[in-house]
Length: 422
Image (cartoon, rainbow, N blue to C red; front, side, top):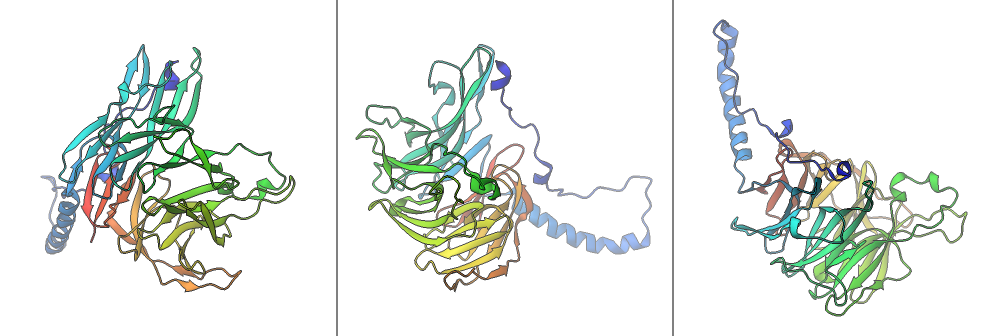
């Protein structure tokens, strides 16, 4: 039983990539100084001065949260909601249920959820926070959880995903006739009215048609249907019935978003059609096709104004498209990773690799978009990367909604550090 719920504890050491050697080793008493070594001393001193300045900048963030942080999110008002790893034992079974905290812009922080006290079901139950999303007004949270429930005395578990609804004081927001906990819900967001939650649930898996193995791996991801619920009113109902989505990027403040629509084959044996990039109007429940894509590998992200949308069409090409004029687009040679937009939308920051893996941060300048003829591919441009924070590696990162701050999670200790963006 124990081994299925035994979870990794706190890291004891920083990742080597997070260390800066802000010193030079001294020569031993038996070493000799040669003339060419003495001649190099002034150059070494200059290099040391420059490197020390970089060390000082790196070692002095504007804000540091010294906790074992698993996920975090900025609100429009500059508050940071974050989760911390909380491991404990019950009857010799080791469980993890992350705590939820809020850090104010002045650095004061308070816990709004003690994971050890949050219980669902009658058996051993663990969860880790997978994502945190604020409501547009900054008063509510949708917390996406990866859950694990022990379902037998032999230690078998059932894995899943759920979303917990909270206000910013930690009070659970209960759906009338139900719970604050929505089983199966992912990518949940509060809409502009502050009273409605829209979320995705996995669509039942259809029979596998022939030729399915010919598709790229990322096109085989679980596809979803969309639902909405008003907690004060009662149970959920479907949105955009008849449509399926493999990814959604929300613009909650404007009741909209962009999505990758997965079109199912019309008959068993037919090829799976290519995905569509679509715009969503949640208020009117209307869907607009922007473009049929040559492929989709991940990273769907809207710019802060929602004027542009970015996504990888394969592992090495990032496509950027104008939402208002979808025939205007450009492609950049950028390795696939995690993406965030600068506040002025002239650059994108990319962390190479998967979301929770350590990777370096780089800026890429967004070139001018150009009109693309129907059926043609956008032009592809080379994008020289600009290193961020001296090529150090980080697990997670995000840019504040006003575009002025960069928050990163260190590997190893998992502290959160905030730096100004220049």
